[in-house]
Amino acid sequence: MIDSLLDLRSVNLINFLFAQLIVIIVLLGGLIATIEKYLPTLISQTFRYGKHAHKGPQDRFVSLLEVPKSWFKHFYVFAALWSAAGFYFMVNNYLAGQPAPSYVIDFLDVMGTTKRTARTTPTETMVALFLITLQCWRRFYETWCVQVFSSKLKIHLSAYLVGYIHYFGTVVVILSQAEGFIRSEALPLPYRFELTPRLALWIGVFIYAWRYQFQSNLILANLRKDRTGKVTNQKHSIPRGGYFELVSSPHMLFEIVMYAALYAIIARNTSAVYVFAWVLSNQTMNAWLTHQWYRENFADYPPERRAVFPYVL
Image (tube, rainbow, N blue to C red):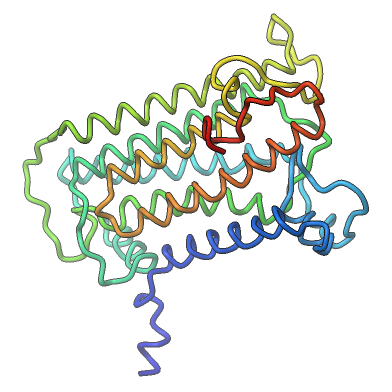
């Protein structure tokens, strides 16, 4: 009995991790949205960051744990390398016919329990992992070569670490219930790639969102650059053009759409819903805070714009 309780491999750690993130964002986000003025500064200052960071007296302890917002760039280096590693093992398995190394299987057992079963096909896994790798490398490029981070803005260390957790967990989830990555399971070879109309549809949805998230980030970056691409300021302005005419944070909208597409592709993976729920709750809350900030700081902010979902919220 004691041994079984202490055996972490009987607990789905990756599900537990994402569940905790969801609870925290929903609980604290709800408090911030309803009774923020009654909350301790510590909570507000920890939760808020960037342009909608806490204003007024600062909590000294929280301030010690704040880092520059530009550190966002760091976890995209990790995300690019981590997703590429997962993609490498997937390609070796499915295309080169080399079974996943035992240490990869052991690692997935620790994160997703030894009772894992194969729920997604090699085609679904290949598509999902390719798309998330594509996203990670584009975000790596954007944060290092396109975006302009304000030197004054800070984020709490916990928000910084969550970025690592998100990308670490997403890649693990995709492989955790994939054929060929389950202990004592032989993958039949040769393998044939089978692109169904369902997969083609969701690939199209993902690529559409991927493309317009990039456009949205370019619009934001260009607010601080001149026509030659030289950075001229670090101030915040009202973004215009593209999907900014509908919502305040189209880049967050398209993040939700991309992860909805990923979820649809590997929907039989029972852990995938945790990733999508986390992205939905996190991006919605951040978009709402950003929308409120725009409305409070720009008297001429377009009243017809919504926070994240066109015509709805």
